[in-house]
Amino acid sequence: MEICCVCQQPLDAPVFESNAAVSITSLCQVLEGHTRVWHCAYCGHTQTTPLPSLEKFYAEDYHILINSEEEDQLYAAREGGNIYRTEHQVATLLDKCNIPKGAQLLDYGCGKASTLKALCVQREDIVPHVFDVGEQYRQFWDTFVPAENQAVNVFPEEWSSRFDGIVSFFALEHVADPRAFVTKVHHLLKEEGMFYFLVPNPYANTADLVVCDHVNHFSESSLRCLLAGVGFEVKSIDSSVHNSAWVILAEKRDPVKPKKVGSSVDGEVEQMAVYWSEFGDRVRSFERSTEGESAIYGSGFYGTYVNVCLEDPEQVVCFLDQNPHRQRQELMGKPIIAPDALPESVGRLYVGLNPGVAREVLDALDWGRELEVFYP
Ligand SMILES: [Zn+2]
Image (cartoon, rainbow, N blue to C red; front, side, top):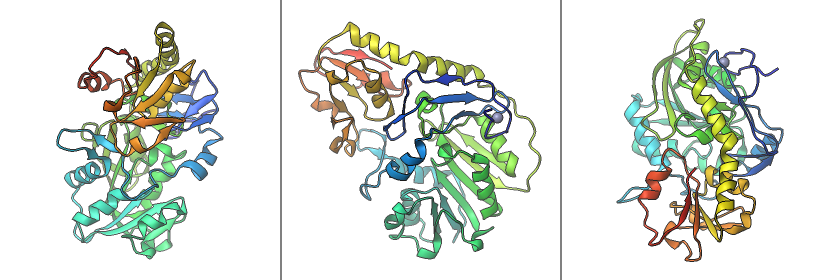
């Protein structure tokens, strides 16, 4: 039986199950296996059954943005310069948190730890520490974190109750046991130490529901349930300062027995599940009603998902992406190019973007000709 990994209540039946035996990761790899999503009406949490092939994915493929030091994800394309995810995360962190002078700070599940590194440039007084589950990031850590402040897989004994603050950027959604994760964070913090973290908000970006390596899809109530359950006082849960993410600030307290938190997201989760159940048919129906060469706008999860849904993906000649880092790469054997380099021969465009922003993004573009457009 499936159990809610936040509140431990038994779960009934999946709210979503992919039709095809393929699933897509947040890094746009296609894995074997059905995606199964469950919703807990008790605490409001939604979770995906981890695929057997995920372990291999983390061991071999999950080297997020490891190609270079500068590589970063585009946060927003603005006139006057693109904003990258790392600089936005530093600005938000400094705005939200009062980090004491000389703070002992840990980035938990840090990857390259680019945000912590950029933070330490602005705040030289901070003593940085890093933790992750693989050795592959050492070369990045070594540029700014002393070896004794780095840990892989196991925490040194002397880190117990050491930290003034622990930060975590998009790690908790990947973890099969989020309670164990936040319990550990609680243990490593000083009394009243702060825990600041970001996780995806599926209610702002519906793709999160079907990204197969995101085990956890948090709602505000499941976040509160999780944190209160291990002894955190929630200071704020903000859904507006970072696109499609929850930004959470909590403080360590003594554990108290959590009270039941009502769920108000059942209907929204149901709607998202229906959306994704019908998505493939919508793509194929557009595909059949039009013809000729096509392109997919967006080389992230949505773009990959569209490509996987197509009956004849050979018709797609390229992906379009505004992120210059993406433009040097390929996706599913096709080049990723800048939108203004769209070949004249292409008459059909699939928009592979968050449906919440797709029209706004497309309206701002001028192709200089008519295109047949599929909106997600
Ligand atoms: Zn639950």
